Amino acid sequence: MNQRLVVSTAFASLLGLGLAGPAAAADMARNQGREKCYGIAKAGQNDCANLSGSHGCAGQTKTDGAADDWKYVAKGTCKAMRGLTLEEAKAKLKKS
Image (cartoon, rainbow, N blue to C red; front, side, top):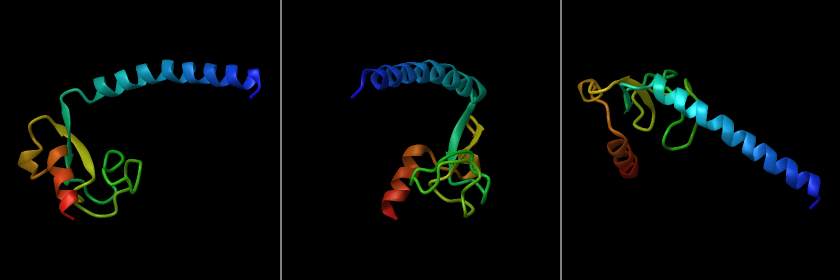
């Protein structure tokens, strides 16, 4: 392997690590006071990737109430919406 490729790969990795920290911190700050609630998202209204890995982005769920798709809700409101925690969603998927 040539030395230039090794150095550029190492540099790109370090640069990527430096950018990931602030992005993760911003995401945490934005979602403070909220929790992921599984099984309540309407078709096309999920917030991000699902547990089963069939899609990786927001707005891609095809069915209402899919147990592996989630939305952010205010902390403490998921149960009132008949939603599932991460553990409950995983258990439900295992049974399927």
